[in-house]
Length: 251
Image (cartoon, rainbow, N blue to C red; front, top):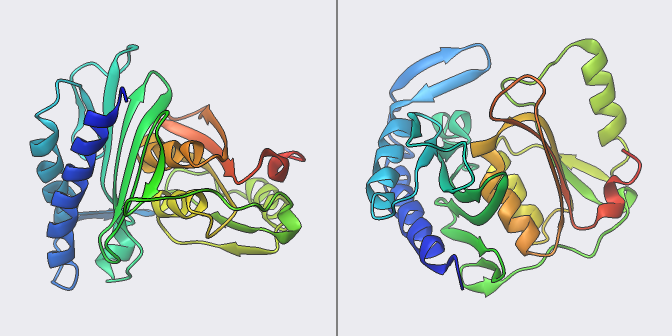
C-alpha cells in the first residue's frame, strides 16, 4: 500500500511520545503559558521533540502545533501534521482524555492518521485505501444515520467565536441529537466516531493539527467527512464528521 511506510512511522512516533506522556501524567506540570482559553505545557514541547526525532527518518516536511512549519507545507507534496498532546488542559489536570495525534496530508487531504490514547493504550491508525484499525483490529463507524438516535461529540475550540449569535446557532445544531458529549480533545472525539462508540462530530474554527488524523480515521472507517477552511484562521477548519451523511443533511 502506498502509505504503509508512513503509517508505520507515525505509529512508532506516537507510541514513543505517548510513553513519555504517560510517565509524566501524574507528575507536576510545568506551565509555559496560560492566556485566555489556551494553555501550553513543557510536556507539549517535549512530546513534540520526541515525535520530530522519529519523523526525521522521513523526508516529508512537517507542520507542528508547537514549533510551526519545518519545510514547505503549502504545496501539493505530502507533509506531516503533528499535535503532540491534544487535550492539554485535561493533561494538566490529570483528566485521562488526551492523546498524541499525527497525520500525513497531501494538499488538503489527510491520507494517514494515527491517534494514540496513551492512558488506555489504544492506538487508532488508518492509511488511505487500507482501512482503519484499533490496536490491530479493523474498525468501522456505527450504523446510526438519524441524529435523534445518535451521540454527538463536540467542543468550543480556543479560537471559536463565542458571541451570543454564534452560541445560539451552536445550540440549534446540537439539540437535534439524542445525547451530546464534550471530551476536551478533538482527536479523541474523532477516533471514537471512527470506531463506532459515538456517531457524529462537529467543531468550528478547530485547528488542522487537532483534526487531521481523526478525519483520516473516520474516512477510512467508512464515515462521512466534511472539512472546509476557516474564514479567519490560516490553519483553522470547519469540520463535520459522522457515521452517515444523513446525520448532517439538515445543516
